[in-house]
Amino acid sequence: MSQIQEKALSRPRNWFRLALFVACGLVVLVGLNIGYQALSTLNQLDTIEAERDHWQHSSEVIQALNLRPDETVADLGCGSGYFSLKLAEPVGPNGKVVAEDIRRLSLAFLWMRTLRFSRISVEETGLCQRITAPCS
Image 1: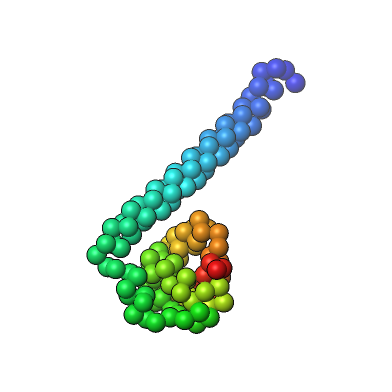
Image 2: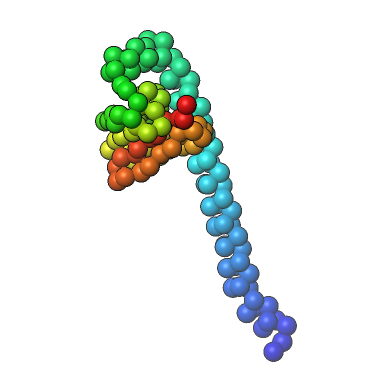
């Protein structure tokens, strides 16, 4: 086989390798972009919730619920967990907060937020997440 014939046969392999390389690069870029957007959203949630604390007075709302340690409380339509995370402390490490939302993305952000608080654990059950409070 001549060198010209060998080059002609190797061209499709080179194109395939190039296409595979470009596809892998795009997957990595998309993954990095999604990660960046998730971190940006988490930072925005912190800012928004700090502002929300000023006008909603969540501590007064939670006090009005008169929660005790080891109780179970439900946060229906929890979103990204504004109240869910705050409810975890009064029910204690043996209590449960059942956080439920119809949007999986909201529950995913709640899960990511609980990762930042290593003392809070989350247990997924279908569309719900159970949150256990920090240990005293």
